Image (tube, rainbow, N blue to C red):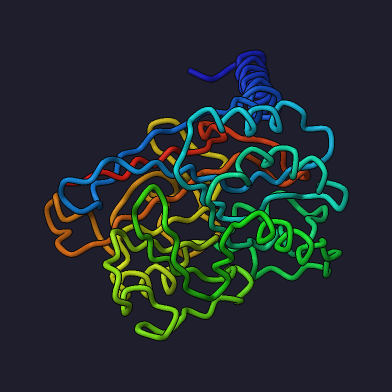
Length: 316
């Protein structure tokens, strides 16, 4: 029995209609459907009270994104002890005022930050299919304009946030001593992991460290391996957008780095499952944020809502 031409046309029409509906949802609804994830990580010494960390990443802010600015400002009501910003804050030369407004209440809280590739350089129009390649940075592109990242880091540091660009530091937060190590953006090959045990390593000092955190923008394997070797209690990263375009019941298709897609977002172990799961003894906790934005030239998300995360560190 053959298939009629009209039947094929109806099927093709239905597929096209479904595709158009999915695109409209991804570009008009989900990309602005911000959500707060809440994750508990058992890394504090026994007997300690919980420590709240607000993880912000990949805002990719542009002028006029009023809803995003207001939503990020409102996160201050969570009353975090520490804010961690893992980069890609903006996506436009004129986004500084909007970004500082969004972060204004958070800059009054102890914080730590690193930069991402789109903090340094502005996004430019390109074939959107590039994003579906395993590592889009390997595809040639024209050099985009530089963003005023030096002013941005100066503003952050002036507010008291710790710059972890290829360096170590220490923060005292809520009566706890936090040892910090971070890297510059591995997506641009700017990462240089600091040596362990140097004079900036808080763990070599006389005051006991309560938790050791690793902060980076892009969770490339070499950076995660270095953090694991450095005995980091929790590695915190962004960059992946959680895949940005995901399949329901399957997950991310790409990570835009060499991290596997099953760990494109959320809390996982590195290099394997967590120690409390089979086969993962000795692994490091790792949290990857799906972030809050997209490139202005690919403003879509599907099955991967934009997010910020409240990480609550607790004693096991």
